Length: 136
Image 1 (cartoon, rainbow, N blue to C red):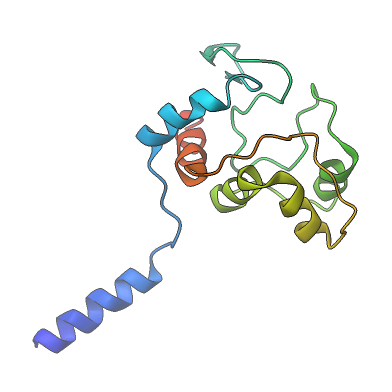
Image 2 (tube, helix red, strand yellow):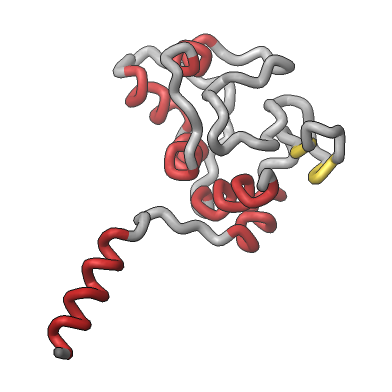
């Protein structure tokens, strides 16, 4: 019986999503992002007052890549968005770790570039989880 319970627990753990950021840690980590990005709800509520260099990140998880109509995206990320790709927590975390490398890989184009020069060395999973939580 113990083996069965252990086997069931292992199967459940493997079936669970491998991606699990901490929204509370991400809220703190977002402080690095707000120099360029704000989080403003669709009703105009300012959740995080931030810069305007980057797009508003409210509702970014589940949103099409490069789909904010109020932002002028770079050529490479716009090309990725044109494929119909959407942001999920894992892809956003990978993008923030190294935007240019992410675009090169996603587009299979070594010449792809990113206007976002900042790299979030750690905590991208947490920031992505935080962004997912604020738009619920």
